[in-house]
Length: 356
Image (cartoon, rainbow, N blue to C red; front, side, top):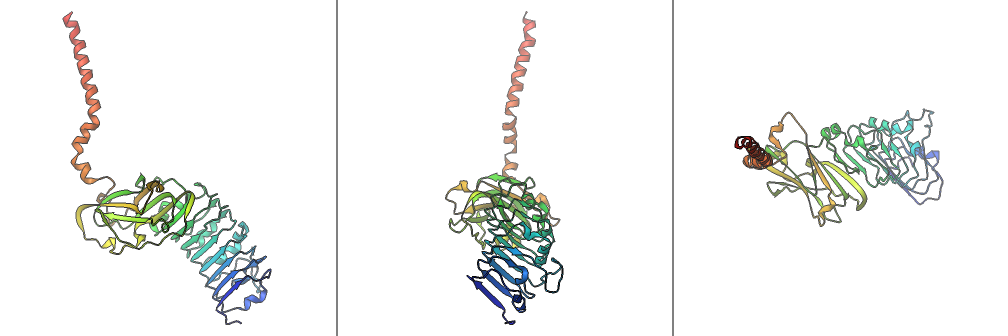
């Protein structure tokens, strides 16, 4: 029994697992889909790498058989932890929660938590966090420093103030992030924003090392509707491999914040030949039947020493250079008209006493 490496438990009519479960010392992967009355941390065997639990009625942290205090044991091999459709509440985030600090992928789907704790900032290995359909989730108190992928879809109680940490500029500039969560306001630190399904900028010499894009939309199913982000450079589509999002229709606006390089371009944007001419970049979406689905798009080019901002423009460098005199004349035409009218009236007024 101690040599079992993988175990799947399904539809068992028992209330909880026995303490002897800890004897599965070689267990690496565990999948549980049972209506347990209570599940406790004895399932976290010493060599466990991944655990998925579905439909658990309760979770309880317990002391180890050696009598160590709750929270003192860290499961160094554990990488994947998922609780799905479980009756989990905020008590889960006690001191013992730190036993999961080594996981790289953490999933709480359809559970009753109301916040993510501040201590999750200590999860330095965590790069994927999913709290989709946690409809009572109201606040994000901490964000893991190396988080790459975050999903909070259909979290209907999550407010803009409760999710403000997710829009931290430094977090996204340093990391290669891909976040989806409820919201509809593009942060002020973005360089440019546009209503509708597309946005543009210009560069010369080489493509910027890091470009962030943020989309606001109530629809994020890029499979069923055949909608996916698309990048064009001088009207030429840049082919890329896109990982679809597994959600269909959303009742509320959600934001999708991602790095353009995370689209995994086939030709490699960073390997484009160096040229002095300005290149036009357009980020848009293909397959849109109704363009109103994309309400707004924002773009942010991360400033780096290797590339000065003089090589980045957010307005058309050719149009703004060539038509500047015309634009200047049009802009100041009303002032010229008022000045001329005032001059005529003044001249007439000065001439009137002379005629008398």
